[in-house]
Image (cartoon, rainbow, N blue to C red; front, side, top):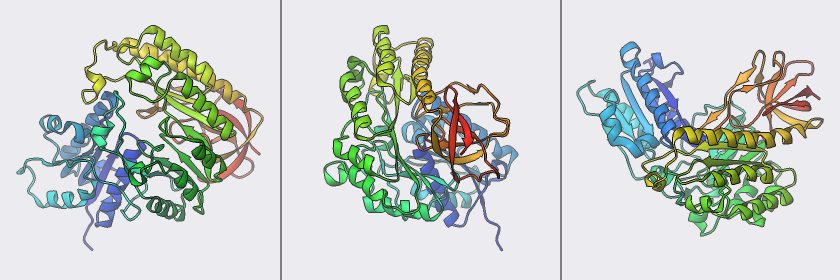
Amino acid sequence: MKKKIRIGMVSLGCPKNLVDSEHVLGQLTGDGFEVTPDPASAEVIIVNTCGFIEGARQESVDAILDMAEHKQTGACRRLIVTGCLVQGYAADLKKELPEVDAFLGSADYAGVAQVVRGLLKEKEGTEAPLELISEPAWLGSASFPRLLTTPPYMAYLKIGEGCDHACTFCAIPKLRGRMRSRRVEDIVAEAAQLAQRGVRELNVISQDTSEYGRDLEGKPQLKRLIQELDKVEGLEWIRLHYLFPAFLDDAVLDAFAAARRVVKYVDLPLQHADDAMLKAMRRPGTRKSNLELLERFRKRVPGVALRSSFIVGYPGETEEQFRSLLDFFGEAQLDRVGVFAYSQEALTPSGALPNQLGSREKERRRRLALKAATSVSARLLKAKVGAVVRVLVEGSASGEQERLVDSVEHGTLAPRREAAPTKGLWWGRSAVDAPDIDGRVYFKPKGRDPKAGAFVEVRLERAAEHDLFGVQA
């Protein structure tokens, strides 16, 4: 039997990028390749990059250079770089990274297997790097192969690509193109496939979930999507991410509230609270309308947990405008908050603006904003003590006393030093804790150790700054 060629992959950036990587791996395994988690043994290595902000770009370049070393020390014959970084900065990458054999943009994932086959037929070192960068038009589907890399009980479901908004700080429209929505039927079909494979928690993602379907029907179709996904048997939790704070009428909120499987969790990036800053960023609404939107959610979706993200240090942001944001946290009473320090990007309109703030000042504001927001969320967590919550078990926490959440998509949290060791405890997440970005629930098991992917009831006994502690009920 002919030995299969081994493929290694590094996926960087957001969950949307992760889904693309899973499609690439599904395509390659379907074409006869073997996936290995060990880059040293991989004959072909693919790095799927993020180009969203400077920190993400540097992380991507570092990963490419790390993987390139396996051409000298490992089995690697070909190194391929894909994704948003290539889509926006291909010319620079080709000059700086001669180790790379092929560059594929964010719309060219469907051709990866063909590219790999072609590269392996060529004599190494004789050809210029392949460059394949199309206009963003590709859209995944339920029929496209996919190899899940998440735990077997959890998956992401991407319902669309691209974005039609003109936020001044964001390069996504240039990197991912115009908004392109999948059909409801196709999305539901993939959700059913995932449920049949054992997935119990589904995280719905896109660049702009609120406007889902506008490009198909002339108006948003989120209400219908919620109602149809809620019918998929086998799923326990469906969580909606990236709800743009517009186009969320009462009918959508009521569908949200009525759904049995859609958890009462809202990921609603507001970005700022000062009216002049919101206008400068080309964001919808005002401080008043955003507070009213949060209140509408609380009124129409009882028990909802609200998460948002904010940018500090935008060009020209005054100290008064920044302090206005700090005051907003007290008014908004958000359950979870992520905070970015503004990143000056050449591909965005704001990148060329005057009055850019220095990195030290932006970092000072980020830390102060995160502290103010965390004081609110910690108080809300403490109010949950005494309640019994349903928890999706993820693993043993034995010996774990510190962890770091660092997300380009959701802001950065400092290392979490809990007040007591977690030895002998297990951990999981409640319905209002999204994977990798929100808190955890640590608990002492009752009787036999639970299994990852199981659901248990936990009585909460203590709250820390970000996480909850309890015992299995």
